[in-house]
Amino acid sequence: MQFNEKESSWQSRNEFKFGPRFASPVNSPSYEWRDDTQFLQVTRGCSHNACRYCTFFKNVPYGKVDLDEVAFYLRFIANGDKDMPVKRIFLQGSNAMHLSYDELMEISELIYTYLPNLESIGSYGRIDDLRDKSVEQLNALKDAGYDRLFFGVESADDNLLALMSKGYDSAELYEAGGKLRESALQWACTIMFGMGGHGYGFGHAEKSADFINFAQPDITGAVSMTLIFDPYTKMYAPLKYAVDRGEFTEAGEIERYEEMRAFVERVNASTIFAAKHSTFPQGFRAILPDEKEELIAAISKTIEEGDEDMFRSLRTWVPKAM
Image (cartoon, rainbow, N blue to C red; front, top):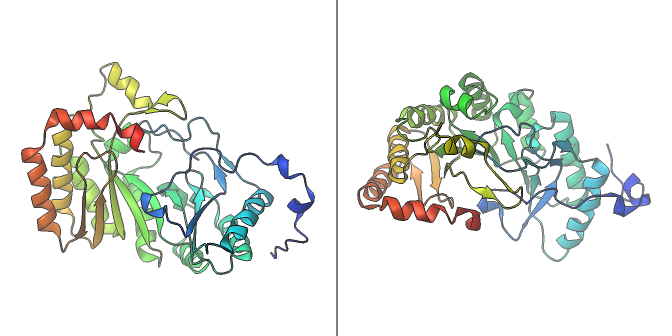
C-alpha cells in the first residue's frame, strides 16, 4: 500500500473527529524516554486486561486505532522531525504487538512514509501476542524496522501465572520464548519479584531463571510487585482487595531481595540484568554472567544491612515515582 499525503483520506476529514493523542498515560521502559524517540498510539488499552496486580489501562477498553488517525499524528511527528530528528518510534497501547503480522507491517510502511530516516520501531507486547506469529514473520518485522521489543513475562511459575490471571501457562511461555530466541529481534522482558507473596519460597525465582536461560533475552528487567493506588484509573490493583481480606500476604522487603539473589544465582544466560525500577528501594544493574559474582555480593549486602521498615516506607512513594 502506498500512502500519499495529498491523497490520504484523513486530510479531507474534520481533524477534530480524533480523540486525544493518547487514551491513557504514555507507558514505556524508562530508557525509551530520549529526545530522539517519539510515541505513537496504534492500539488503546490492553488486549488481556485481567492481570490481578495491574491497574494500567483498566478504564480503557481495548481497541485498534484507525490508520487515518495514526497518519494524522504521524504528520505532527514528521513536522517536529525537521528540527529534532526522530530515530525511534515506540508504539503506544499496552501491547501493540497484539496486532496481526499484516497490521504491523502496514503500520511500519505508514511510519516510514512519514519518517524515512527512522532507525527502529519499538513496542510492549504480551507473550500471547506471539501465538499467531512465526519466526519467519518475526524476522520480517525486524526487516521492517521493529526491534528492541519488550515483553512482560513476570514469571515462569505455572502456579503464579494462574494466580495472577496472566492468560497463558509456562508451556506457551517457552514456545514464545523459543520464537524470540530463534529470531533476529533484540528483545527484553520483565521478571516480577514478590509475586508469590510472603513465604512462597524460591520456586518462582528458579523457574523464571530457567526460562531466561532458555530464551536468552538481551535485557532482563526486574520489578517488585507493588499494589499501589493508580491516580489515573482511580483504583487499586484487584489483588489489593485479596490482601485486605487476608487471602494474600505481600512479600517482605528483604524477602524480595532474597528471591532476586536466588534468581541471579541460577541465571547463566548472557543478558543485561536491570533492577533499577522505582519499586526497588535499592537498585542494581549488571552484565551477566560476567558481573554475576559482584551482583550477588551487592544483593547479599542489601539483604544483610537493609532496613525492612525503611524499605517498606519507601514503597509508599512508588506512585509518585512512576
